[in-house]
Figure (spheres, rainbow, N blue to C red):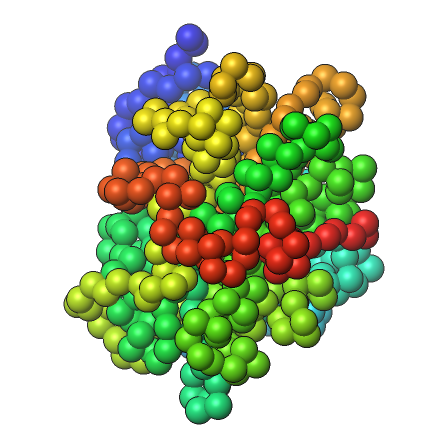
Length: 574
């Protein structure tokens, strides 16, 4: 490998050819500030916050895109560099909505931190740009007054997710990041995944806040308010309270929700197990009876909308099963009221999700049974943290509590839904037992685990080779479906998650301020999920005693009439 020798701030370093100055500086633990830069996603050098001096070169140069060369001498904090950065930040601030106290990203804003570090309190530059009005039409809210034109959202939407509903428009001082013809997001092919929120350095993109709606429901004496919490929330919520990444805060979360006033605290892991019962049965029926293959999972609402817009020919391949969120709501307004002696019309179901697209999913027209919507309100992990803080609950000091019964028991299979590959592995654990008629002990299907965008595996069950694929990120889903269309790939079962890494990296999860640690954070959350799975006495969905009771007492068998009415749905070509 060709190595390049250079000096940065008086320190010698040797790095591979084609390394940038920014990357070389990181090897020396020299922190060069960045704003637009996002490794592997947005490496364009547009904001110029990362400028440095290079001896013998004219002017200043952006460290994020400037490649090293032999004998280079770089200075990252000279008076010229510091003053240039201050001017750049002040110019950005001039066109930025500076009402920080009312912003959801206050104290968790990259621009705010950069300005604090540079000693900038205000700017003398005149505001020149009007970048448009707030768009609250979808699950993702766009506030152009806070946009800093970094381009991160444009890149992740187009290049990672292959959606492309936001882009640059106009020129000079009138440049803006907007939608085609400035149409509202709800009127476009936006899949509500929220990955744009995750990469936005400021508060220009946020989820549509539902906390006030939930507070109102909790304070309404005529409502019976219950809550469900998704698998990935429990290994991320603690980050909002300074706890180590990946910490399982399930017990404290349940206690906090009870203190907030929820009558019952249930677990989406329960309905994840329920999903496997229905989806596993559907897969076996399709394989045995010549049904449409490959069958594709339907748990990710962002992926479903992506398919509805772009791959109409695959709509029949989608499992007809509702997602765990929606299955829970359907059961919480039918089976649960019958058991608890409550009027179903008074049951108000709240979901705590790592996903902004779940807000959109809950509002879909078909997501109701007998006139009752499955889910009444969805809040993200971030919104739950906000409510806990509003209630002045000292989260870290809370004792642990257990989920309530009837809809609270779950298995290890239910919790791994939070990771890419988790739905596939959970399904295989149950399908293998059904096909073999045995209680198999080897249940960790490590071949379907990992963080690659597309993974393939062949699993032999009872003499049959089951060909499967696991995809995370809708851009990767598009690549796989194109291969299938071209006749270059063939599978029985495919899992697709809209977000890179799965739900642990959903659009509603805690914001990772240091974007260089994104992969590390995702990995720690995944490790937290698998640790919970390993700790469970029961790790197969069909072993869940509450699921068995639900079928025995109410649903009958998986896939039968009552299950179809409550737990299955249909899709629409858009």
